[in-house]
Image 1 (spheres, rainbow, N blue to C red):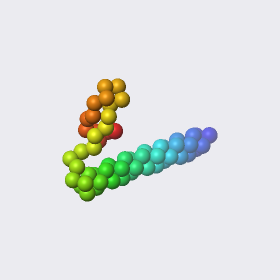
Image 2 (cartoon, rainbow, N blue to C red):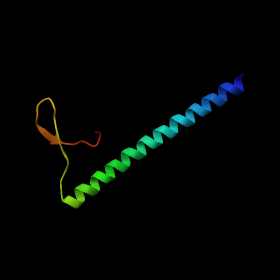
Image 3 (cartoon, rainbow, N blue to C red):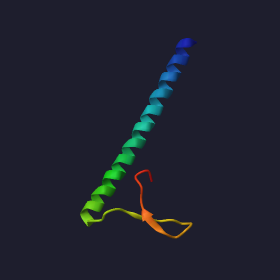
Image 4 (cartoon, helix red, strand yellow):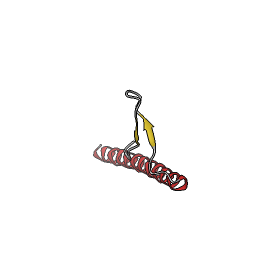
Length: 63
């Protein structure tokens, strides 16, 4: 029984690490794609509109 629990913990941990890796890889790819587009167009940053105030601001890396 202890072996089964150990195997389940290892499988779950591996699955969680894989999902985390894929998520980080997607974020990194999107960030580099956005940076390449800004470099091609000569832009300094990407503007996003705040839906509440209607003002534009620079998009942060976390978004």
